[in-house]
Image (cartoon, rainbow, N blue to C red; front, side, top):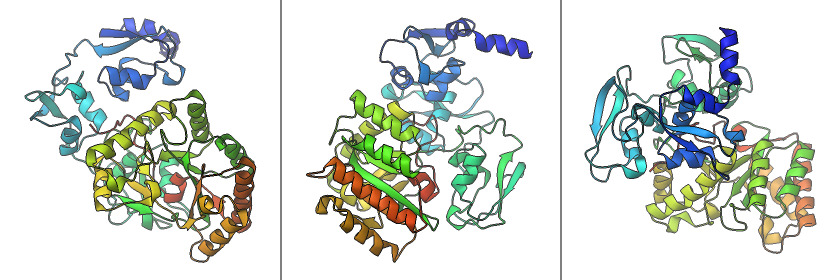
Length: 443
């Protein structure tokens, strides 16, 4: 059997496709990405990968033949022969509204409806919203105590140690945030105590994969603002308004100092995210352990935008980030820190869970990179918090590379000298700052 598995995995992707029941194929052309292809054919990430066993999106080669529709796919309604519950599409409905209504994720809805095209959803179409074994529930509430599993079938428990966070635990066991919270219904990650027992594997868990389709990652049930990290002695240094000319030198400095940071980037502000050099820098940020999160497409004040304009500002940037690092942010720093109740409602509707503000504003833009003034502001901030989120900028008017690097180096040396550790935003707030794998932007 092992030999058989080896031989199958050693076959070229095309050879494995020919043995499948594929009704439509696509030949990869120069410049294609998996993201572009599954969007083109109305698929989800998981659906494309299910149709193409062994597909490596990071090594997609021109000329490769991919399956983009199974033999049972008709492009219309339910693709499941064991559908328990159907939904008839009403005028004006979107896939997002439907999967949210039934507590599904995007990938769950698409898996239940093979060939579903959300971009051409027609009134009267019948969609499957619950398979024969599907309960349709959407657990994973984060309210209440952190006392163990919501399921009676927990196979492996973990005892919380001093300094643990939910993020550390689910990362340790290769879980997604949503699957961890589903295993531990009612867990409150902000009140995790040493000695608490949490479930990290249920009897139905197979491989502990970090990909989860059990919870709707677009849930708009909560939105949290953060100005500080959750654990003392952590700090999060952040850079707004990039990508800019000196970000690679900043990355060199961060690597030298052993500090992880967070970059809140724009798509079309100080640089064009579609340029190859900018994309290379973003990929480097992510690959070196920093978080790359949303600062909107054009640095627009969200309090002045309609819901549809907000969608455009979020989605255009998110799609580009995804095409570069394979992750979609669900965390944002609104430009200028500007927000109101409408802003929060819009962000929640489009699947954002975390808004990142700051405890310390270095005002680097105001004093044009004067290191002493930045240190003075940080010093004042540390009097009221030993876990601050700190605001800096990749760009400000009259910025000079040497002055910028000198200022940031002095900031890092000062903070590290106080016994603080520089962490990325995911570690800072103790939450996954990206959407779950396979989840797209709401329609």
